[in-house]
Length: 508
Picture (cartoon, helix red, strand yellow):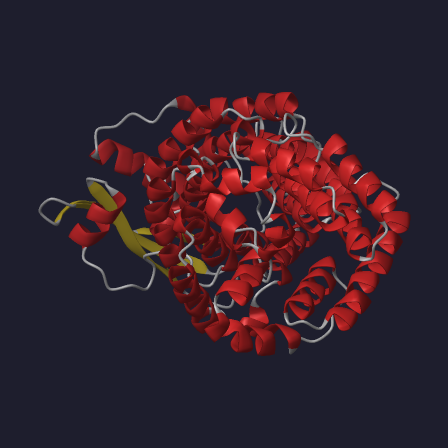
């Protein structure tokens, strides 16, 4: 059975049943219409007319009409599922039957807000995160006992804590997941939310996998659960297990952006670039207004063969589909820095775009602006922004009063640029100690690369090259072509060991 998210992408699209069936890899398609007697009235009567169509010959094998009150929509949903199963001569297993018969809320308006939250939480990036949080919160305002909405809100809050360092979301994420489980101990989504919390927020992979196993036991074919387990395996360095589960999730939901993106990213980190490309291309085509797909594809081309022309094409596609001013600050990172240094024809365009962005009090803003000014030869001006970065991060550190490896890493880099070597090394080493590679096989190497950049900046070139050599021996963002292209490593060009490192064909 294909997930709702994959099927929902065909809403309002004039595609033939054969085309849809072929894209989804299914033998039957359930389509239909829903008509409300009074569309603005959540208590009005509703008519649902479902039709089950065989893909091979476009024959309607079953159809029916259901009339009922809108408040009974969950019972109608259950009846439709039972009759479809009968038409297909498929016996619903107990868990599926219980799930379909279950009424999660009696408030139809709350359920509609929940569905909007689900749609936006499907890809937790850019503005989707905030829209999803708002929708789940609205659903809970209307029904305080709506366990599904609490579980959805927990996952969004876990993401805000993990991805955007919003520390106040940590206890709120756990509280929302606990509330969902308290309201419905058998709810798969509640266990998924707790698994997501332990994985994203605490990096407690054992507890995460236990809760995700509970969710999978209750809903074996839930691709989101399978994909999240794959995420956990990847962070724990179990790359083969992660790939196998991502591929399983992709079969269950062939139009899911996050699964294609994650598979492409995983193959890139494993330096299996040829395998990564089709997944990232598909991810961008599925969600052309999500920035991370473009960023990942640019990184792929620069890592794979150092092809700045292909990276530039992806950059132009992102500008055309999203707009430069709508791209998040993290977009203007290593990719932009490399294109500045190695592709003079786009330098002016990138300068105008980034330097024209309104000032924003964020780490991304200060770091990227400083780096670009430095590359333009405006060193004195860049130092002002590196110092602003230092002040910003020190204030964050005092306010949060919590260990943050990324805050330490970038603070170390700011100190290095300001010539404060001792403080730079102290913070850079603290970052790698607080989040070592064994604890996070994806982000741990990224922090080691920051430490290598700090060593490079303060003149500790032997230590920098030793770190880079080790990074090339394990999965991660770094590649020989990135070492060749990225101007951050320019001070190492005359180092004999570095020269041998970037010349070794085995590392390509």
